[in-house]
Length: 227
Image 1 (cartoon, rainbow, N blue to C red):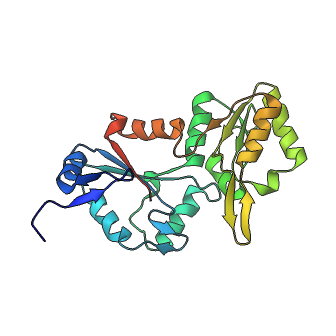
Image 2 (tube, one colour):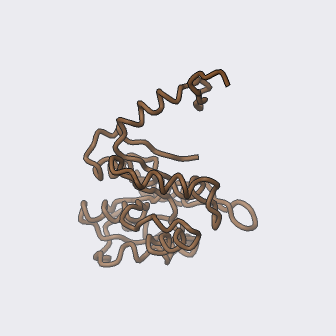
Image 3 (cartoon, rainbow, N blue to C red):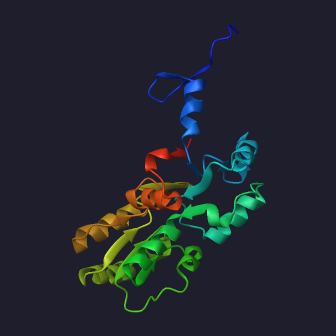
């Protein structure tokens, strides 16, 4: 080694020094970390992640939150899975889910949802008034993607209801190959009812604003970790 300062390549091909990274990190007050694919893949924690997470969580000057687009598990089930695979230092109150953010949107707007979501996710909406729905929430819900249920959602939207999409994935990977995602059904409802969905997913404005509010900080002082 020649004693020079180490450099790291960015996604655009340019190099930055370790000193530059440390300087940038000193101004960061909040870190948002994607779960699946960043900390773990299914039941396997990725190498080095547990130790790095422990070190990060030990810092008192940086707030840490975890984000996920999963719409097949409730927050309770998600936390149990993370603990089962060894990520026991992740607390439920530090995890932002699409379902949890959607619930906040519904509460803020005083909306009564018709849920087209996975049965496991319905507990995220416990306690909300679901009578006379004036909103439709769409997640990954194969059992609900049939004509009668979609037509029920369509009629809610025609009557002025709001359309809320937990995400707009075109497809997802299954055991036997790729499967159609909820995005196609969201687009079908948008087209037929002449409405535009509010999209909750982690890269959307609604999720980003929720992250910023958590720390009451300038959003540019947050860092999102994703592989």
